[in-house]
Amino acid sequence: MKLPKIIVIVGPTCSGKTDLSVEIAKEIKSEIISADSLQVYREFSICTSKPTSRQLDMVKHHLIGHVSVTEEYSVCRFLKDAKEKIKEISAKSMVPIIVGGTGLYIDALIKNFQFEESKCENKVKIDDKDLYDKLKKIDPASAKIIDRNDCKRLSRAIDFFNKFGFSIIEQKRRTLESECEYEVLKVGLNFKDRNKLYEKINLRVDKMLKEGLLKEIDEVRKLKVSKTASAAIGYKELIPYFENKVTLKEAIDKIKRETRRYSKRQITWFKRCEITSWFFLDEIQNVDLVKSLVIKKICDVGFDVQNKIV
Image 1 (cartoon, rainbow, N blue to C red):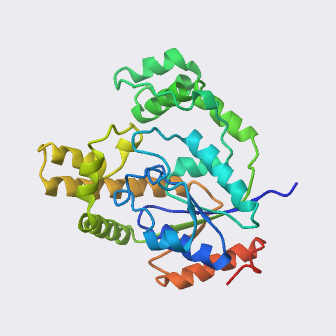
Image 2 (cartoon, rainbow, N blue to C red):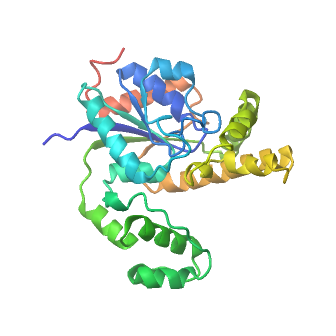
């Protein structure tokens, strides 16, 4: 059976994923599915650097601004939504373009993660104390292989069990046994000089402020913001400012710092995938050249888009 083809564009925040995906979608006459865990929220536009209204007019986008910040949004919901959109776009003889920086969403889709949907929305607050004992009680198999001092992995394993009702080890086993539902071409954007990426991040935050970030967050904070939405960088750093606990400069500096740290985590996550074709934007500074190289890659791997290229 012939598998549906998808193009996946990944990379850290500010690496130019949105601009490139729009140009490629225009070129091969396709549509874009966002794999960003925060662009799903309609009230976050500036905060999450959504595509501009012009870009949204040029190319049809999916899974952007389709839920309220008052709702929880999980990897399970993303999988369900993304698979439906891939089916719809593929049925129009198009190759869907998946774009985003949320590594878990990308992995869940292309590695065909297996979840129990009924457990997906369960939210259980985790106390930071005695993580090892908590994990050992609910998931002894994971506790055996995770160091008792590794708080990050312990917390993740507990959170996973509470959400899905089974061990994270079992999740890995199920994933290894499952087969990908798609033929995937994965493209990554990055910078060899990390400082150039950090400069772009700092400039973007300054631009967000000029575009009205403070007003956007001031409006959102009046709502009952869900746990997943409240994790947005920009929202959680500005709340203390509105509560007169920090100065605006302190809040902005923290947004820049947290965004830089997040980009570093994204790079670490995406680098684990050996099948990604990487393009470094400080070496190929012309966006049109990057687009041409990616289009060539798409054609070289046998994705039938030549007859669609404008």
